[in-house]
Structure formats: structure tokens, C-alpha cells
Length: 362
Image 1 (cartoon, one colour):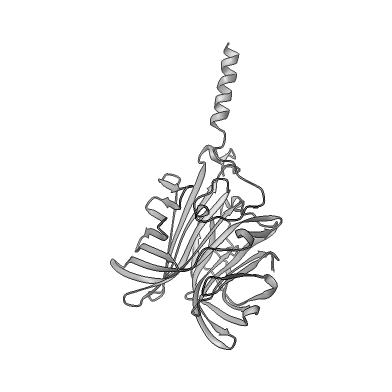
Image 2 (cartoon, rainbow, N blue to C red):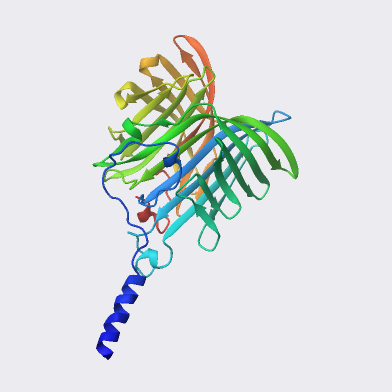
């Protein structure tokens, strides 16, 4: 009898320790479906919702902003210290990043939240994501964003001006090494709302960009990071470029999406674009040497762009990984005529500082 009770107890203990979520490791097959796929996916190991943009207050002071929510299903992960399954502690890890680039004030500020001891949500039925009092949700087509940190507080309503764009057939992008994940963008979104800065509340208006990616999110072996560009031109053209870097080379699966003014899109191969680093900036904090100016050529559009950060130090120094995420200005020519624009650039894999836990970010 005692033996049976012991076996039953062990079975109950094992059942209690079983993971709550099962991750789908297969290469994506089914195309994206909207609005369903705006919400959270619990068969995806990693998922993020990413907002970047520019707005101006009533005095024409300019700001860049980033608000991002990262979700990680911990089923396959190990704890950092004791190496037992991470889901024994937490089924789902969430991290939020919030940054403000105060262009006129020449300041860059950033903050992070996690869900370890904080109330959180990533709704699987409709788009509603939050960590503490940071949140993004969709209501009747409007994206509502809230976040705060010392010195800055945003309360924004974002109205998409173009439909979601799949970055690849069905929204499936290849990352090399036989890996791929889902990825779509909303490339032009009108921003209205308020910014609290310097103890004052300002009315702001501008334009933003939204990315949503989810899946296994692995890349080819040997990949050290990536460069990502979201570029919005004053002629209504939007451009997304992702360049996955293997040592000093760019993985051939890297690509580009072009979206015209009405929202029609086209995917370009790596051979149809050129991205040249013009100068560099070295972080005094992490030792990372980042590209800091670029010349970009989009051959099918006869378009040449010069992309320049609004300030060099827009490095996000946050555990478990440091990266550069910054507002940029754009000027160039298309078919010989001048074009201007604004955008954001993300640079991952340049920091010389190694933080514990980065092995789980592949």
C-alpha cells in the first residue's frame, strides 16, 4: 500500500512539474491571419511587439520613442544558476523596454520592466499586452500605448494609416540555417497623445512604426547579430531592411520590404539593395563599436539614402543584452529628385560586454 502511495505521489509531483505550454518547433507553414495573429501566441517560444517613432510637441520639440514587449515561453529553458527547468519558476517571461530620445534636449533615457514579481498580460484572444502600468492594446483599430520612467511618461493613441504588411510570403521570413518565423509590420501609423517631460504635460503628434515577430526566432549557427532599419520617407514610401550578420558577412536570407503610399508592398532580395557603413561610434560603457551612419541604395527604385542618427549615444544598456536602438534622420534622392525622411535603426551583436543569460536569446 505504501509503495502504491509513493508511486502515486511521484506521478502527481511529475504532473505538477510538467510544462504548461508546448512550443511548436516546426518551420512556419500557415500564413498570417488578421486580426487573430495580432494577439499572443503560446506555441511560439519567443514573441515581441515593437513600436518606434517620432513625434513633436506644441512647441515643435522633437522626440523619438521606443516601446517594446518581449515574451518568452520558458518550456525549453534552464534556470541560470541551478540548471533545472526554468518553467518551474516561471512559465512565461516578459520584459518591456521604453526609451525616449529627447532631440532638442540632447538626452537619451531608457528603462526596463519584467514580470517576475509584477502583474502582466499577453492575451491570446485579442491584442492586449502589459507589464505593470506599461501597456499596449488595440481598441476598434486604435493602438493605445502607455509607459513611464523617471522624467518621461507617454499616453498615446496610434491610428494605422496602412494595413499590416507581411515581411515575406504569408508573413514567414527565413533567418538562415533552416530557421524561420512570422513577421509583419505596420509601417505608417499616426500618433496623437500626451508626453509628460520636465514636469509638464505636452500634446504630441507624429508618425510611428510597429513590428510583431514570433516563433522559434533562431538564426543560422555563427550569426553574431543583425542590423534592422525602418525608414519612412516624405513621399509616402516605407522601407524595412533586416541584415543578419555572420561574422563580417550578411546572411543571404536577409531581405527588404518596400511599401508605397497606397500600402502596396514588394519584397526585395539582398542583391537588390546595398547598405554601406560610413562611420562608427564606440560606446564608452560597453566598448561596442557601432555603425553610426549609412548609405543605402534601393536599386529597383533608383533610390539612394543617407541615414544619420539624431545623436550617437542611443545604446540600450539593459540586461541580459545591450543593443543600439535609435532615431535617425534621412535625406537622399529618388530618380534624381530629393527625398527626406525619419526612421529607426536597431543594431544587435556589437556590445563587447557579455551578460549572463544571453545563451537563451538565440
